[in-house]
Image (cartoon, rainbow, N blue to C red; front, top):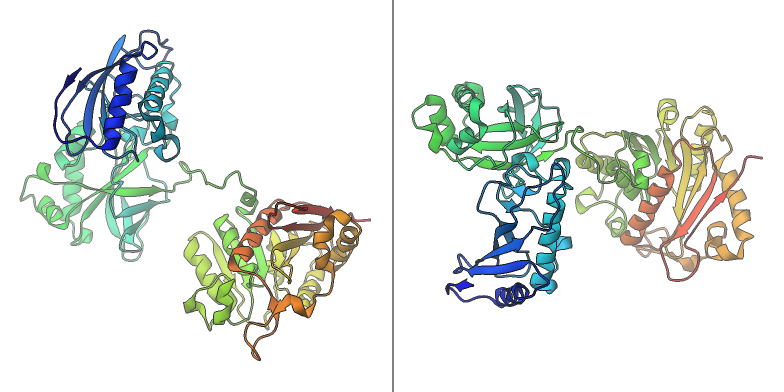
Length: 553
């Protein structure tokens, strides 16, 4: 091994080299450490060779030489795995090869990289990567940012373009509007205060990336580069572009087919002006790459797609009561993707409620349903939020008959009875009716009483029947309190002489119970079963949950 001394090795680099040197002399490992170069900017380059002659190549797999050469670059800290590079272009275009020369050995280093294993774990991982690559087990569709060289352009940029509309596969104009200092919403049609963005389809993938200057990008685009440059000039010269940076979106075809990968960049205001007036060479202009939040349905899969809460996706909800449980449930249902939600709660927000209800300081003094509606609209642009806002307004026939879920979270006997009276006049409701509550003593138990689709019995009748079944079961003793009178000692008076006694419970407990209630009710969408679901926040002992079905006799 040739060794060139430079800056002093860090303790991690020294330990890695020692472990790699030991492997290099072991007959059990087909790796040899050939050269250790001088440290560059704190990073240690190591040249190694690996005997790959025993690997079997399958159709579509990566072609390897019998003895492959690799450059391993070790950072001074152990927090990230070493980089693995090659000094040739034979791997360009293969999945999990970044910019044609860097191997993506760890898809998610935060979970997969274990520095305690030193060079042994790292070389084992590299060996497995090569075996999978030669066997053709890597799919382009699973390779991150494969169409643009495996590295997201603008990963460190402050500006993020949010794209939800379809992007045509032809040169066209899109329209951007600054929503915040760092967020630009991109639309297919002009909006108020919007500005034009050039959308340009590339003729093929960019396996070596898109470059950092306009000249590098034009070279990467290839045959359509001149036409793209002219389109930029035309847009920059038009008055509607305004005195602002010039933005563009590239649609890069994915080798696996389907929708293109989107890449967004911008040219500074001064360069854009020079581009439009053709007063300076365009090729030397630097591109500021922006991050893209690609939320087009054609390429996006929701992170909660397989969760129980997914039952609320596209649903319409009527929520009566926006307090300790309702305020949290409303947010969780909106995040789960409800299409619409109608809120009603005339209560005023006071400071003490912030301890456990889903409100903030600026909401104090506002009506609960109004403040909550404002919060829900800030969470999702897609949801339709209706705020009934006043105590005299009763649920309308339209809101009840159209709802997939009608949820009573009031903890108010009179309000519940009013809701029951209203619902009784709509026997043809298509949705599930539910009443939710927590236990007053500790706020760690939850209950959801459900009247399934087509069950016109009052919730009180179902709840009473469930209570008889629960209190007959010793194994459910922990939930008997839901059908017992609340002792005064189990309540808390928040402000002496100014507050009605209420139940105990923290925001953490209420949010947890609300989350379980949302997941529970989501499973009942369109279902006919009626009964009560009882549960408690997990404890080492006892029964944590039970479903008590109440048949229609």
